[in-house]
Length: 400
Image (cartoon, rainbow, N blue to C red):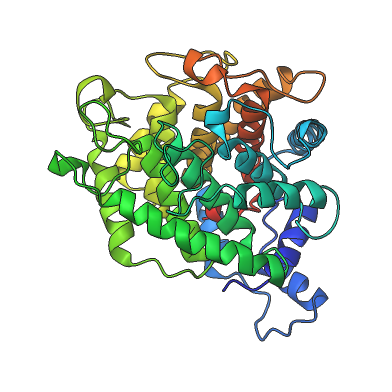
C-alpha cells in the first residue's frame, strides 16, 4: 500500500505553498527524511509537463498567495470550531457522512496531517466518524432502509465522497488506523462495483452510477459517476486493486454525456436530466483527466465553456439545477488540469469572489440553490476550501 512517508512529503509541499520548485525540491524533501536518491537535479518529465501547461508564469502572485492562505486558514478555523463531539459536522442527516468527509479533506488539502500538528485531532475524529458509518453491505452512509441498505437519493454521494476521503488519508495515517481504513475501503469498493453493474434500462447508461433506488428515466448521472470515479482512481493511487474495466466502463459513460452542440457535459442523457451546468462541465473535465485524457478536444471545448460562464456573482445560480459552490469546486479542479490560459483567466477571479464574500467567522454562505441549502455552511465552506486549494497540490487525486 502507499508508503506512510507520503505524509511528510505532503507537509514539505505545504511549506512550499504549492509552488512548483521542480525535482530539486522533491529530492530535498526525501533527503531531509533520510531517504537516499540516485538522481540529479535536472528537469524531469513531470516538471516539463508543468512548464508546458503553465509556461513561465507562477500559479499565483505573492499577493494572491497571501489572499489564499488567509481565506483558507480562516475557513479551517471555522470548521474546527464547529465540529461536533462525535467528529461530524452539522448538516441535514441526508448529507452525512459526505459533509464530514469534505470537511476532513479540506484540512488535508492545506497540508494538515492526521497524526501530527494543527488539526490532527479534528482529522482523526472526522475519519473515525466516517468509518463508523459503513453498513454490512459496504455502503458508507447514514440513512438506511431496513438493516443494510441505504436507499435515499444522497446515498451514493455519501458513499463515494466518504470513500474518496478515506483513500486520500490512507497513506498519511498510522499503521493501526490504516488497517481499519483498509477493510472499510475494500468493502466500499465492492459496493461501488455492485452499484455500477446494476441492470440499466438504456445501454448508454452502462458504466455509470445513479441513486441507490431507481428514479425517473435515468439509471446513471454524471454527478454521482464523477465522485465514484474519483473514489476508484484514488483507491488505485493508494494501491488498492481496481480492475481496468471498472475505470473503462465509467469513462465510456462520461464521454457519452458530452453534448457536442452545447460543448459541455450533461447531468444525464435523457428527459429532464439532459441539461448542462457549471458543476457538470467541471466534473466532466476532471473525469477525463482522471482517465488520462488530458487536453483532448472535448476537454478544451468544455474548458472554454467554463471560461464563458462567470462565477463573479457570488452564490448565484445561472440556470436549471446549477449550484455555485459545487460548480466552483469542480471547475477550479478542471481548470488546474487544463492549465495555461484556462487557469490564469479563471482562478484569480474565483479567488477574489470567495475572498470578498467570506463571512467574518470564516465561513461561506450555504448554497443558494434550494435543494442544497439544507446542507448548511459546513458543506459550502468545505467545498469552498477545496475549490481554492488546487494551487497547493497536496491531495493526490487532484494532482496531474
